[in-house]
Each structure stands twice: as structure tokens, then as C-alpha cells.
Image (cartoon, rainbow, N blue to C red; front, side):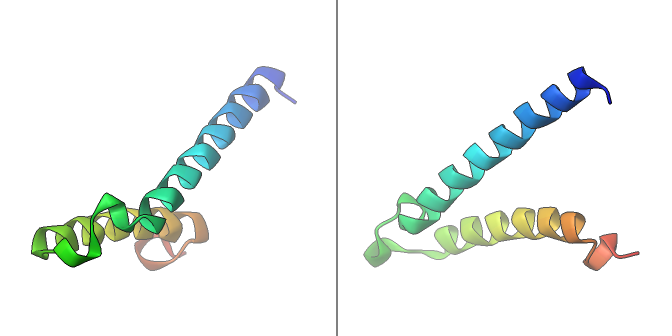
Length: 68
């Protein structure tokens, strides 16, 4: 086993987990947007975020363009 690689991997995993917690809080707070003030720009921003997250989950679970 490569101990240095494992340590670097675990640091990355911890950082990913931290980012996921941040994103969850961001979306729980309606992306820091007042629901009464939602406009099409906000819809686009949410769609962009969904597109990026879908790409990541498709890669992780080998779906879509990443399917074997």
C-alpha cells in the first residue's frame, strides 16, 4: 500500500464531504435567494448546478455518457 497516496486520497475525500455539506446548506437555503424573488436567472443558476452535479453522479455511478 502507498501510504502517501492513501493520505492524499483521504484528504480529498474529507474536502469533498465538506463541499457536499456546504452545497446542502446552500440548497436548503434556496441558494440564498428569497423564494418570492425567484427569476429566470435563478432558474438558470439552479439548472447549471444540477447539470454539474448530474455529470459528477453520472461519472461516479457510470451512467449516461460514462456508462460502460
